Image 1 (tube, chains in turn blue, purple):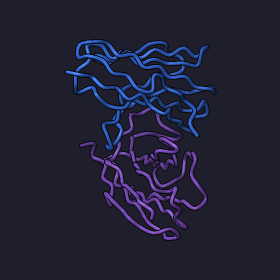
Image 2: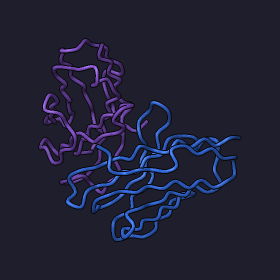
Image 3: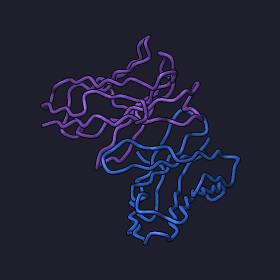
Length: 111
Length: 116
C-alpha cells in the first residue's frame, strides 16, 4: 500500500517556468526521498531529506519538509524539456525498515 | 547507466508458473532492494538484503521470496503466478548499512513480467 500522496497527479508547464510538486504522508518518518522516472525506465534518485531537516537544495531542485504537516514539496526551477518525467516521493519509516512510494506526479515541460 | 543489471528484460509466462529474476548490484554495493511497479498498486518496496541477510521487508507476498548470494547478486523468485503479478520489477543497490539506507539507491532497468 502507498503512504504518500503527490499532487498534482499531472502538471504541464512551459520551458523556463518553475514546477512545484507536493507530497503528503501519514506516519512518522526517518527520511523522505524524491525520485524521477522516465517512461518505463528505472528510477533516478534526486534528493534525500532527513526528518530533522527542513530544506535541501541540489542544483535546480529545492525540497522542503514539514514534519508537523507531514508534507514535502519539490521545486524544479527554470524547467527544461528534459525534466519531463514522473516524480515520486518515498518515505522511509522511522524505524528504517520500510519504504513507501506515492502515486507520482507526471510532469510535462513543453519546449 | 546506473551500473545495476537485471535479467531478463522481459518475461512472459502463464498463471501458476514460477520465475526467477536476477539482479547484479553496482560494484561495491552491499545492499540490494526489490520493487514492484504496476498500474494497480503503483511502486511498492518488496524487500532489502544487506550482505546476504534480509534487513527490511515491505509488501512482499508469501508467494515471493528473495535471496542474496555471497557474490552479492540477488534473485527474486515469484511462484504460483497470478495475472495481477504482471508488473515491472526493479532492483536497486546502495552502499548502505542495516535498514533502508540513507545512501542513494541506484536502480536497474527493470524486468517486465507478463503473466498470461
